[in-house]
Length: 420
Image (cartoon, rainbow, N blue to C red; front, side, top):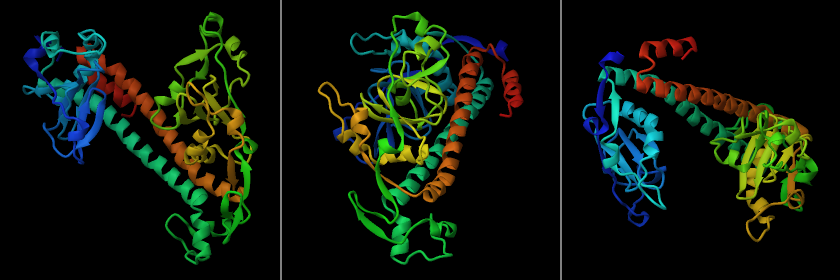
């Protein structure tokens, strides 16, 4: 109960300790995570502390908090909880997450942000009993565990899509299997079910790009998709931005993505701002490629989106589906970067991008690929949407539960109503 909470200080409840320095040169190949202020920075063969652990950013990134389930090495750029004093470790993690805004104000560094444990220990706090800690950690942990499950699932889905594209359109494995007699009509091989047999030829022929499957053609990416760029309406004109409702993407929006699906943007523009961008509002399904600083961020826009000048956008209005084009860009990133130029920073222009050659399969092959790849992509998108909702719910509940404003039974009932 909230009435059982006590007034105390962090130093009474926990002991923080500075981490231990270890250079990359002194690290040996292993599976033990080295936790720096930015999270897992590398792996070593020796753990210096047992999990579960809670680590705070001390230098460089002040206010970051990490929960480590396994044995680990806390780096010198961190503070780690040396003694939980009987408190629940996962609750302690969420407690410090809620305290992050306060912790960032304790920075004692000059050029490089730095946190001193002696400034954290005296902080006055409200602290719940152990039973309440466990309940709070369970509620918030259930949400985080589902988010983590979605992340791992999406890693598998993405790997499957990349492997399928590479097998069919880079290695030409189905064609080679028929050519070498390893795949017979009516036979299923790993990744090659029998019903796909007639989609592929049994010969490779010479082309300007080397051997390609018979009946496939060489084209250019600009000949197969509509390539366009974007712009930035004047940021000095409030009418272009204030109250904006249209998504407007910059490469920074893509840099934060774990997976190549763009569902929202940091900034929105108005109708007046949109009118200043020649490419307008690009439809959902457009493939976005950052064209500079750096080249190579990729995503499929899941919502209509306008873009700034840091992109090459590909509207897949021809025979090539967006799931194909996305994977093609990944596989051909060296060629894309090789066509870039610039003195201050490398940039791939639309005129240098459009001529990049591409091997185009017949439509039945593309349809067969899309039947599999679309399922993988749609499931990935569904998982990302769910994770976004779960993260928003967690972030709403976190400060209320940690402060005692929201009681555990009320939070449990709230989650139950939402099927969680």
